Amino acid sequence: MLLAVVAFVGLIAALLRPGLRWVVITYLALVLLYGFAAGSDSDLAKIATGLWDKDKFRIVAILPTIGVPLAAWTITAGAAELTGSLRGRVARRQDPRPLTVVLVTAVVTALVAVTAWTGPALGGVSSAMGDVFALPAHQKHGLLLDADEAALLERVGEFVPKGQVIVGNPWNGSALAWALGGRRVLFPHLGGYWDYDGRVIERHLDDFATDARVCPAVRAEHVRWVVTDPGRLAGDRKAAARFSAIDRVVTAPGGAVLVASSGSTRLWRLTACW
Image 1 (cartoon, rainbow, N blue to C red):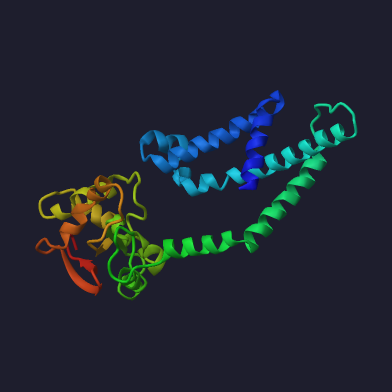
Image 2: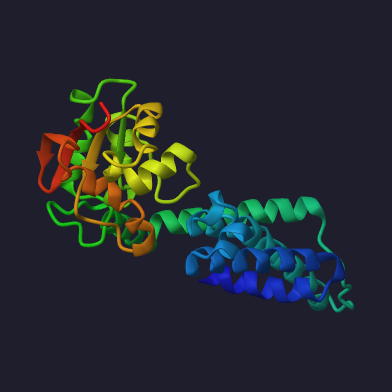
């Protein structure tokens, strides 16, 4: 909190100095981008932040790279002004020397690191991280993964040969088959711009018997396996619904054969098109 107050005072002081106004503009731009990333999933937000930096946590991690030096400059400049006043001289409006700013930045950074490590905040962060990454045993309750699904995805290498591809709705956690089981998935993240074959499979996989585009796409992408799970990550329902054809293919005659299961998660061998 103290660091935030000092940084805020520094922003006010930097705003009054023409040569340092770029710091204020940069800081405010990052705050605005954080707001875009945290509060909107619109195309404008994605363009403004870049597809990779759409994650709000990446943007908020940049703020200390400006906040800590700004706090160090504020302390240094304030100390210089105060020292000049106490000595009975007219305090001149002078920027501190670069070496002084560097040294104070190092000291402030060290103090912040030490207080964060030894203070009560670390315990709170640890507890919060534990809550975020804890896996429910059977019911997702809006999370991407539960323990049952993780157990099956870790074992997909026992069933899926290398070089063959798994398809699934990424909103049900199937995308993590690549990270947990070491087998490639066709849709490795929640949203993206797929190629022609990927779009056909995404929207029309269950129409393999009637749509002449489906089987060439399946063979071109080497898709031979399907992962299904009724649980969905809470969020954009429309985005998740775009992959519904993948769930329907396993119920279509001749679509797939069940190979393994864990809880509500199923691994199917795709028989359509093969």
